[in-house]
Length: 115
Image (tube, one colour):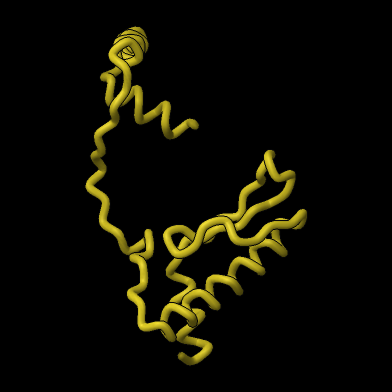
């Protein structure tokens, strides 16, 4: 695979660099391609290392003839999902939504968006 093709394929995958309190450093991952795979104290350096690792993984997957996982950006989402929770929590959330003058759905969407 040419370098430009490799970079274009790698660009399709979400890359996350986030601070890990548990590890005391930044940790990089690229789900669903690869989980936590690099770490360091410099966020930009971790991102650079992550990009290199993603390219290497793509190269290896191609060499092995394996199927690539679907990039998150190409996946279709309906906007609906089922959430299971305890009835008591469901009741509390419904009460909070009612007190806020909102539907339960609207209240939960705003709460999730703010998290």
